[in-house]
Image (tube, rainbow, N blue to C red; front, side, top):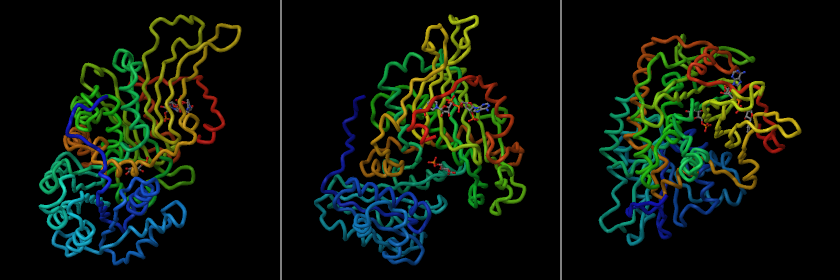
Length: 510
Ligand SMILES: NC(=O)C1=CN([C@@H]2O[C@H](COP(=O)(O)OP(=O)(O)OC[C@H]3O[C@@H](n4cnc5c(N)ncnc54)[C@H](OP(=O)(O)O)[C@@H]3O)[C@@H](O)[C@H]2O)C=CC1
Ligand SMILES: O=C1O[C@H](COP(=O)(O)O)[C@@H](O)[C@H](O)[C@H]1O
């Protein structure tokens, strides 16, 4: 796909002076994700030569103390780590808008950008709880976002903000208003790390670069679509945070809905980020708000020697927060009318995986019957995002041999084999680089966010009002017992008698 827009150039000027400011540098996200991703970019030579990284937080730390905290999360050679840490500084400051820390931050940044003739880039990464975004953005906007009148025209200011972007449609819109008054949309990068995963990105390429998919990627061939997120661990002390959100806000409204948009969207006008996001937004707007009848909610109880959700000391007594949800969505457009899209996500299940499964209709005329064993088997197109990226299509083939027997087999693209020597980048690594390049394709635009919240807000409000008692399921099980009937009602038929014979390398992944 060509880019038809001439205002789009995602190249990093080689002479740029870059300041990356990590706000909330003392926190978990910063040390586990942001700094390791920056280190990985540094190691691979993706950070411009003149880059400084400044950590900002309330905690009293020296730069050396920050380095010590970060060291255990940086994987690489000691010398390389030491060189990277030399780029990392620390400024202590409060988050309130008039905190003197912002002036101090501005001083560091301005000193670094001593040459007005060269372009300057200022990337503010808000690794902070969203309730402080408005005040932090005010402080940054007031003290740190003015590049000065003589600055090279290729200079920029960008801010990456983490989810959750609000709690429902109304609060999300209010947050967007507040931030939007300080940073225009082209400076705001709302991160959804699922958009940085290898297979999420491949969805677009695979779908739109191969005519083979065009013919069947619609209601005439596809019976149902499942997008499943499973984790084999519970909230483990994070229950306090989780409880006020629940699994729909935590995973479904954002990550899985973004995957749905990539699967269901129409062909964009070009590969310009806004053309792609226009299509994603359009398809999300074709989805009617979810009804409680189209939802199964669950909450895990003790099992497999593991405690139940309510036994987590950080969870409020008697909480009804769902740790599992399956949501059946209908896309009311010409391509997908009548095809159920089931988004389901759960904590404390039997495995950790994220899988997109498109199941096709049965063959209307089963030639290999009446005793043929596979006439009722359905083709399935499966994309496994993790663990071990794989794309496979399940299909009936002739069983090798003298008889005309059939069996279910697969066309298989397992990344572990096909790309055995390739290191798949971490999502954060990719997304931070996109932000430095000015590519907003894999970030959530305000109208997409609005469309996603519109789908889930009514059900979320009903859950918040305590109107639904989630169904118990055992820790380590497949989820609430009623989910299989729910999936069957959405058209899903499990392929019985399908056995996959993994190769050695795939066995290692499984
Ligand atoms: N390249 C590769 O790595 C390939 C790997 N495989 C592997 O082969 C195996 C089978 O593949 P596939 O058929 O695609 O996937 P699965 O059999 O794992 O899952 C198919 C569907 O059946 C459901 N299911 C699983 N167990 C049960 C059960 N006991 N009762 C009812 N429903 C159930 C699953 O839901 P739920 O999640 O709720 O259990 C899922 O929706 C998998 O382990 C897969 O990873 C296959 C092809 C290629
Ligand atoms: O955003 C979130 O995602 C993680 C899962 O991310 P993954 O990349 O490990 O699949 C999830 O555990 C967490 O609850 C949620 O907030």
